[in-house]
Length: 391
Image 1 (cartoon, one colour):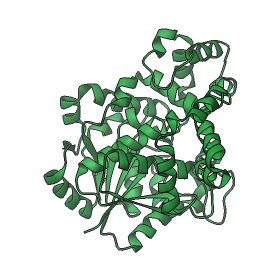
Image 2: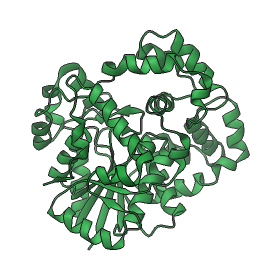
Image 3: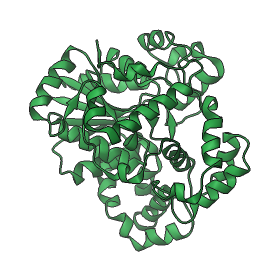
């Protein structure tokens, strides 16, 4: 039995994701586990469709079992997002393989990149580059270019490669026996602004759903995904629906409110507060706050950590439980097997998580409430308490 895994967001599920799953299945693996962000995304936003819709479409398209990444980890930088995901997979006790998409498509290059970057934080050239006022990712790329040349630094200049590097670093950190593999992205790049044939980036698809509706992206998603999406046309998240809530939180904040939020340093809280006070829209705020040093994704993550009251202490802890969002028959087999091998408690519903882990569960509940408020017709958050989806 070979059990592969995919760390994912499926925001939303599209034909590129289906291509990856099919490629994994064609290698002869017996089961595929997905571990997916709930409602809070790594880029610093909430998902366009609910985690339940995304779970169902993923299982209908080849995932056997879906695990949730809690929001205190899913809405963080690549390093924390990756370490939490790997920690959950490792402690699930039955996973043999991790497969991820990359622009490079060569696992040897990604492993080499992970080896290079492991001790980079202590490198003097890296520290000098940070002092120049450029962003953390840019400082990594420039340092590697300075030391190893452009051919190696190019590995780090693409977002899926970078995530893959963090996955491997996390596997090494936990001394995991899970074997990493990679599949080259098909045709389109991450965040690419135009489609190629029937493939489009998730960001392109999200933008077109919000601007032109679901029919405008029909050719880029699988048929069963489309049929699932159109069931709930009013349950599409749009950040504009909670814009006033976010602006109120930003405008009413003081420096002390940012003290326990990850990635806030060197007076960034003052910049956030001052720009928020003069911003009439979120778009205006994000345009004015972004600098070479502070990427938009970093700022967006900070904003949602603030709104959801998620502390950096929670970000830096290890996950305490494993929550199953959905499974098919093969996935149910995996749950039975995992319960004999897992080092963490496994839950199929939310109520027992609230009982045993109240501090952590509040993050999940609050994120779902915020997602509901961002839909044109409020999503019924009582679904949070239903048992996992079975297909």
